[in-house]
Length: 109
Image 1 (cartoon, rainbow, N blue to C red):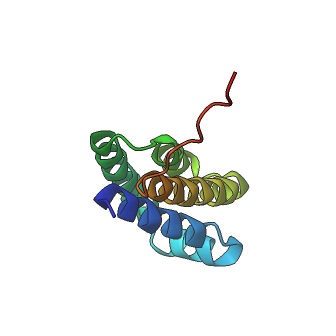
Image 2: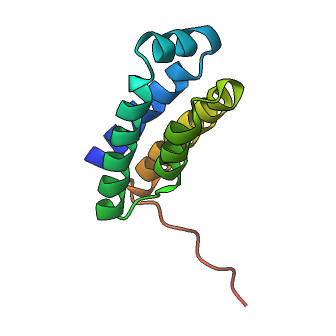
């Protein structure tokens, strides 16, 4: 398992936790919005790692956007959930490619 995939699973989990309505708000407000800055840094690190490994980048990009606009109450909650799901899906798809998947041959003519 590549380090970028591990980071996608970690950041996706954190995003889903921050997307839980009351819990996420308590964490973000309780720590004076510092978790958003930490998530921004983690998403940038994950993006750089994904680019080096040639893996999908959309989850990290959406996570960066989420970190920038998550201070808006309900928009932030929705964006945390969306970015968490996208990161988890991209981490899972990366694992499928690594298993030696070969597409089926084209039909005979």
